[in-house]
Image 1 (tube, rainbow, N blue to C red):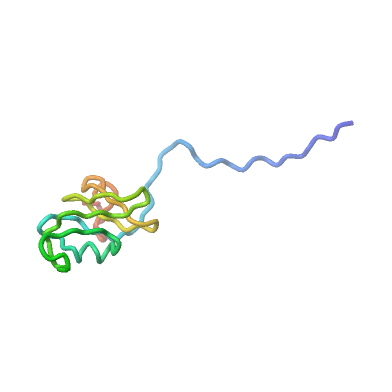
Image 2: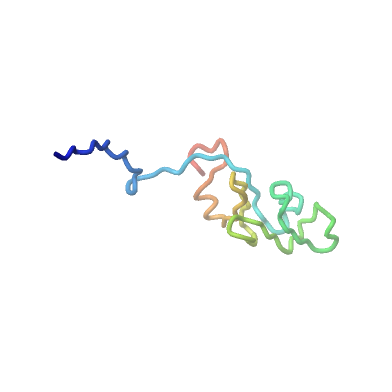
Length: 113
């Protein structure tokens, strides 16, 4: 005589299809705007960024940015004029203005505009 095995029902699997909502997360970020954003602005958020400026490279108030390279989880990424450097729990990310605006809104801005 064979005794049937007792199997518990499998736990429900996570949804693989359906509608999802982005998780709310607050981030710190700085936008790279040539002639406005300073080396100090960038280094205050991302101390490991490689920021090149014209003239005296020791001047943290220089807004004459020549290059900004940010170490991200996928490797070094250049931040171009208009891009955002975003501090996330897993490190830094460089986003275009369009991608940043699609994902984030200023705190206190309930409608996202």
